[in-house]
Length: 475
Image (cartoon, rainbow, N blue to C red; front, side):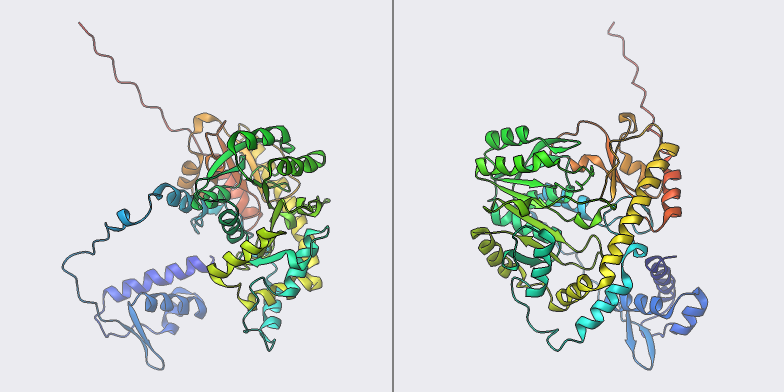
């Protein structure tokens, strides 16, 4: 059982105990709870901390944990209806972001989401890097707005070409980079071009910035430059959000002959390309194409990198790479937003990426993702031969699968079977051309969990159609 499930079990037990006690009564000791439930002291401590944070219990060191006094009841519930009139009318955007970016149910089998399980994270290397970073005498000093020079230099080397540390702004991960870039480059009401389909978090970030998302169809070789040029001309957009390497959700890679053409199209339109290169470290073992920013000298490409995907969900360290006035604006807006990324986290990122263990981790991760990708594809062919995998990717964490239209909402059907998947409808900025689902082979805890999730997906059936009411005679 994972830590979150164990903690919830302890919480349920303690809440039951509290219901039978009065204010000021002492709860069973941690030792008693450990013996009764067979959990660790850390799990019990987490549960008690949760209850204390909720004001349900009071902890007294040396004495124990006691039931807190019940707050006085209020005659009428608070009235917050006025807020709907005071805030801007963007309820739809907020709901889309919540549905798209919220974490899946921790009790469900994870065939959705985009983070590595603990078994694939470099936990020892992360712990060692954080320990080394914490021992530095300046570990808790204020960090530069742009980020530590050593970390910026590392991101510059990852980008290649003539990118330097001066072209890099350290951010709190890819989603933060995306939100900042959209707000810096485009004004509310303006159009932004996105692939169709695309990463749903990009649609959420663009809409949250008040932008209109315009779809540009892609094929197995990425975006078509002719359609991109036409979309720029028709929409007047000045930003194109692109994932040229290991596209999410399809896994495709922008063809070599198209990469230069896409930059030329942006140059002709006087527009920016916001390059999402955050899957760069998720290759399955083959060569990885150069980022677009490495072949752009005129500042049309603003690129995003992140260490979160290949390392850990909580290593919220990423970077924006840009040149010219756009970088000045990004740094100014970053200063207003949150000053800088916490220095200990930046120092830990430098220690992690600079250590030999990092390259070993990336090689092991590539092998694991390649094996998992093949296993998921084979499992779909076995359990759901009526589902069509659009292509086997050479990198990333997802399979893009077309399912029979008769199944309807696959995400809801899977949820009822205890499996978390991502319905493909959220990947399209406009109407979807079919019924798709994004399945993640990088997120399950292990192969056996993946296999169990596939067995449950075999049980999905289309909901029964309602019989049409009998027609009344018009006599």
